[in-house]
Length: 490
Image (cartoon, rainbow, N blue to C red; front, side, top):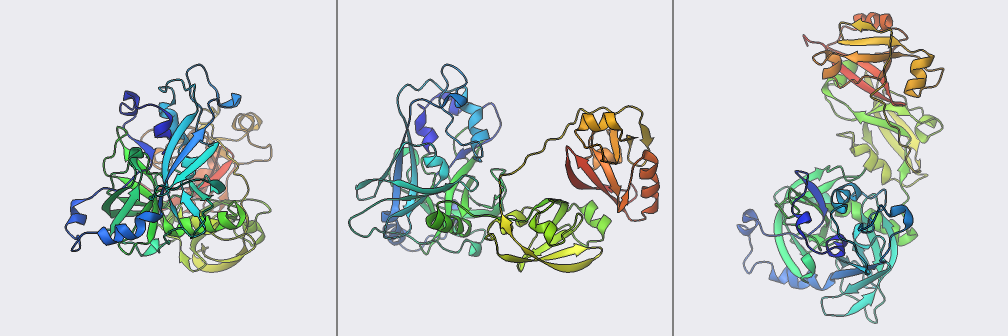
């Protein structure tokens, strides 16, 4: 990992102020469960087969950061782009770093995927580098060209020119991985050179809040700095993951490592090779989790799927008739088990392609065809939790004080003059509103399917609903979401 070698080793890396942090990746070390299933002779034949395709990457970075990235004397350049999933974690340690007056160096790992010299690694390994050097196991060194990179998945594709065909490895099918399967890795921990280690798959589909497409393989790996971008192999010698991050309370490994699944990496790398960037699909909806309370309120027998809280005007979703309140249960034959399944499925669809969505709408299942658009830069909205609305009335059901929107409260909340609804002015700590996660400043637009414009409207609408949970459509900081409020006797 380049940051490990961008700064000298010092106590700051081991005395983090936070209880846990994610560090860019490393390698995999043995686990007792893996050792118990070692084949006769171990994995020597497999390692001999795959190791020549694993490369060691060194990078050079300019000594000075752009002015916009400087914060003061003694601070090193910030090595991640603003949309990198690792920027926030690196910021925790930036103030502890010594001044760097010479060109910065970084180390990482990668692997060759074809005989012509295409190499896969992590984006954070090569981000901002002025020069990228690749060293093969046999000692040959090459200057690499960056073909493309994708910050959202932290993947990058390099290319080197060799006189003769290079040894390479192939991607396997990460969907076939099972918890407990043995996995191996070859990498460059701490710049030591070729290091082979083994472990097992500890979990799958992990979301570590690193980015919008989190779907990590978790291993019991001892993942260390310098192995970022290295391959995770199955026992057939296929690449099933790209080692990327660890969970650590002190900067060292505690046996919880994360790898990008091969199936995701395969799709991203193919697009980087063909186009130099990634063409991601865009549906144009704001989604949220289907909580048990929401499922109960809308008549679903389970809390699965992705609830559409808002539809962007003019988007593919709007043109296809998707509605606020629809729950997406399936996408092109794939089950949408949780909210985060949908963005990944849409993202892997090329713009212009047609997708078939299975929806829960008005108590029954329907199918809708959507022509997927091209993803544009995200728009970020923020909530204002400090809004104060005078002239409120108490709602005994919600355990909150409510007030009708007026011009002053609309201005405070940043809402248009045409917006109607009831704003939450105060919340009782032990009330239903607090238990449901509602906040002061939230604007209730609908109770069930009934629009509301006054506190009295809210109470009347709630009284009409006989289910064990009440569904509210809430505007929070300009964005809409659904909130399920459970009755006390449910």
